[in-house]
Length: 199
Image (cartoon, rainbow, N blue to C red; front, side):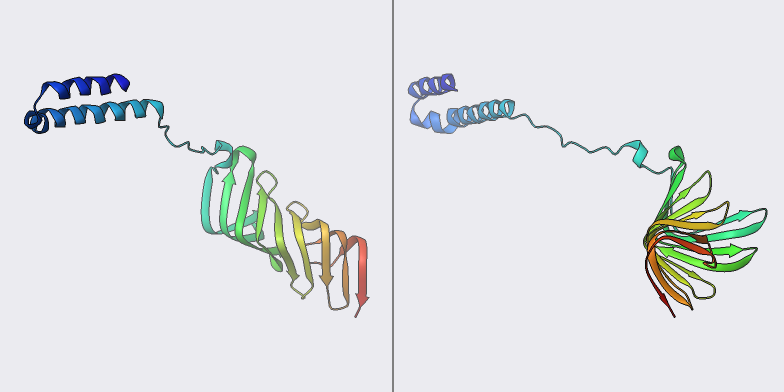
């Protein structure tokens, strides 16, 4: 940079003012500006923005919206799932449900209860269903179970939870931790009862 300034001073001495302003000065200024830009570019390297590439494990193999899935065995409907969004992860043999989940359960071909929650998971090998967040199960006779997490076992058609549960039937209001029942809430066990009221 200092060398450029000395050369510029020597060139200015040799030319008269008219020549300087009309021809030489614009050339010298453009050369000086170009050199300044080139030297500043070499000091500050411009890097392209870094892109956060998501792991292929977090990308579903299938994704669908506003779904209805029927679970059946030997031609008999066991359950019908309705979900806002379903994402299938074939590599891990599970399916994630979000944007609301509703499962209608059937016993011997007859409607027995409805399960709702905000999100869930289906284990593809067993077809078991886990539902989370604001879970509510209402049986055909009006018995209601509320909890934060509920697991439905496809093979036995039973439900269970290790979370806090609250069951309200025509005859009692019971609360506790840990629970197992048939899917229509007729026969249930709460492992650690924390409150019970007979009606």
